[in-house]
Image 1: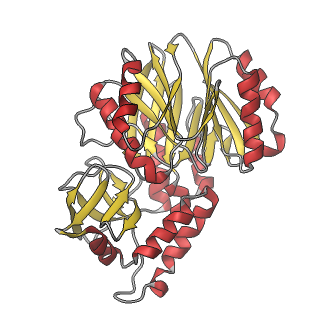
Image 2: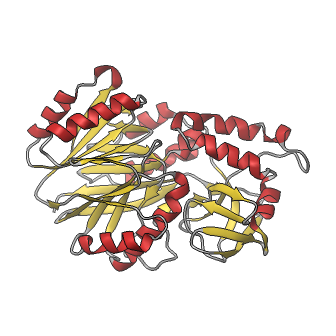
Image 3: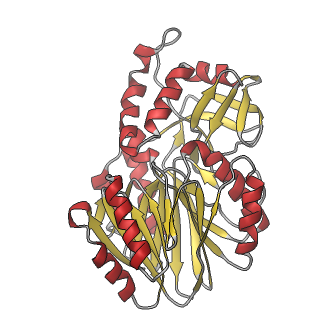
Length: 395
């Protein structure tokens, strides 16, 4: 992996193209863009589309880190080089009939061992991505998936254009990798438990045997309109999401009745040692359902979660310890960590300096990937509040 970082004030697409084209045995360039000016971003990718001959995959992220440190409002390029096979394709997502999308993608992944995956989807559409990716992984149980959903406004790009509502796939083979999921969250000590008692793959209808909207509002001491307002603003643009933690703190003043307590995000077991977040993205009162970021089957236990700045940094220190022999790393992180919680970017940079190989770490609005072999449709591929790491090693 060879890396190039350009901040907004030094942006030069010609130098980016020159860098990529000069990488020896370059197979594909991953272009992670956190540029805040959409016009600048579009011009940049139009130039890549028109002039770059090496295959590339582009996606919007909220911020990225490399051995040079953490950047926002920048372009980060990771060129994957070596003796391996790679392809690149994209498909428009049929949100009403996702099986159609699955049928288009699945045959194209026969014989591949890894698929880097980006989607131009909103957080509210991540549950559909989970529906799609779980079935792809169920058909190809040894296909390692890694990637994430674009930051808003969502888009993906490749040599033939820029797209919204598309999934971008970069399948690879003849390459050795190692994958792990980690989380800096734990369950609160109060040990209060709740359970999903009725749901389908898209919506939750009952918690604790009761109306899901009513029960969730009771648990969180929040009104549906307030929850929906927060999600609408927080998930429209990454910068706006920063206000959500302050609005949550103000919830005690805005809630009209009942106990005056703040909101904590519920969570579920990710592994025996870690927790993933249970993001409720929409409360639909008339149809009585919760929309979340991914499927949680009936019987799923929910509990309140907590984390600290130290807990979060330990997660990144684990990357250094677990992948000390890696040749390069790709890391996908949940944007909720720095936006919704207290987060220490200086400590993040200091911790990442321990990693001795090239790496690209990016914050995205949904993290894709599951431990292999994939064991069934109740195992999520889209998660919340986690860090997913893929290590590349020489054969």
